[in-house]
Amino acid sequence: MTDAWVAQEEVTVHDKPEYYFALEEFRHGEEQMVFLHLTIHSWKPSVFKEILRNWKLFRKHVTCPLYVVAGVEDVEKWEAFVSLLGFKPFIDVVLENGRPRRLFVHFKENNKATHELLVTAERHQEHHRDNQPVVSASPVPDAGVLGSVERT
Image (cartoon, rainbow, N blue to C red; front, side, top):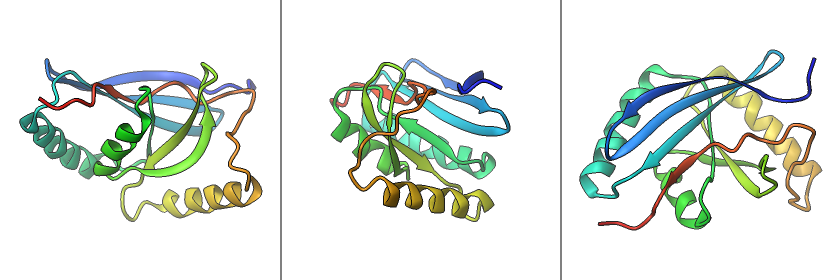
């Protein structure tokens, strides 16, 4: 078995002139990570409200943990935005391109995997008190939420 996470497929959820929203599944043996890709082309209040409405509906039906990692340089604004969607900081990682980033996770409430993942993250943080990024033979895929953070 390989040490790398392997992309399985990317599924488009919404492809609109204002934004693109997709999921990408990665597998490492029996382990799975599903990343959210959200590229926003138009930062208008109406677009943001539509994204929030669609996000709430989407999460009613898709219950697995979802992950995002910043694909932009303005990480502070990006983190504020994904926090509005309910994503929480999970662990620090190193992307395939070598950049350190914080991996965020969104759990569907009452998901059985939630407790196990939180315990794993807490153990990792206790073990790595120096807050150094996680580096392995298979860095985290460069996936996440993209787009300008300027509002119009």
